[in-house]
Length: 132
Image (cartoon, rainbow, N blue to C red; front, side):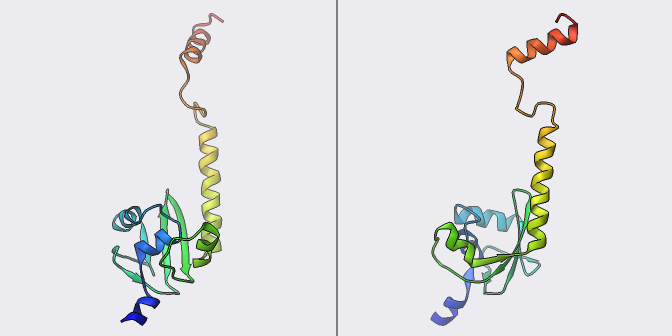
């Protein structure tokens, strides 16, 4: 039984150790909501993963496709956590394109810096009335 534990690990714990989530409960919540798939199948939090499994993850509406390279039962610094998985290049490019698209849509919004202040609103009203 002990050797079996060395080769498997709970999915929520691995996602936490790989630093995709700050807590295991957040990882569990995402898994239960169906935002995480292992080898193309929606799973439960208690799913055990092994080296070589492919994890599809949607985090903040951005896609991740990861291949498990190592299992680590402890949460380590970010540079070490990146060694636990290999990311699919195609998905990484797709995610970066999505980030750029999101940024561009924020810039073209009516108020890119947030809602106008009271002073800004008065100035807009003056322009609309033609008092300027």
